[in-house]
Length: 294
Image 1 (cartoon, rainbow, N blue to C red):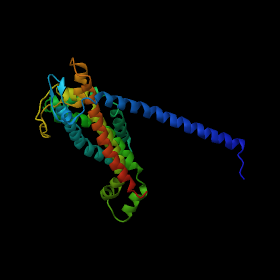
Image 2: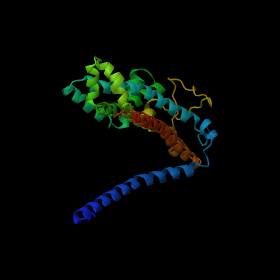
Image 3: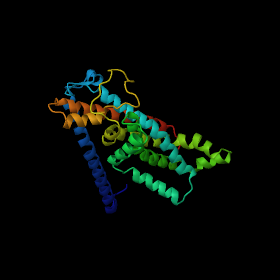
Image 4: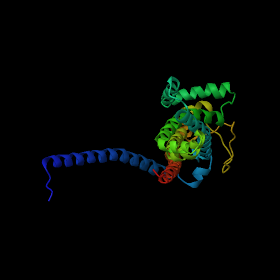
């Protein structure tokens, strides 16, 4: 029968200590998150209802619902996603699959990494100058969406490059050996096998675009705008819009005598919207990852 030696006992104790530390660190992350979300939900419970989601703010935003900010947020997230995703993915494909290693590509990769860390207020000033003033788009949903797309594109490029680089080179060589072109290899082999990683950048883009305030404040958000309730096409591309993040900031700091539950209800809807979109994207990513054969 095997008898544990002092060395194996020390090794087991070290393993148990490391496991306990990892569990403790995980709990330190999860417990505060659960407490914060639980507190928000409890505080928002008196106001959460279907009418709250489908009615406009009234009485100087001291009553009513959040239909116009909710719809404006969805417009900005979807349009910025439509703009940033194809450009970011194609840029990453070029950098990873076509561009040769040189000082230029190294400079571009460094610029992408640095742009991901630029403060949002800097992107706001860029959007104001480039889209609102120079391109004559005015303060509009389109200008705000373009600004959000520029802001989130570096994250999509970086995550897509990592996903493309993770595809084994043997897959590409097998395609080239049977006469496939580089683009055919990318389209039919590389991209399908990296789609789960690409979705990671898209998930991060959605979260950041939905929660930003500074870029849209300069380029397209408005303090108050009443729209037709229940009409999902109430906004046009060149209209200004309300957003959940801007609305939450406004009713929390600028409007007096706001009901206690109203800011919490707005925060819960914003958090729920982001979590819902992220959950769908993560579910799709897990499904696509499970279909891989490697």
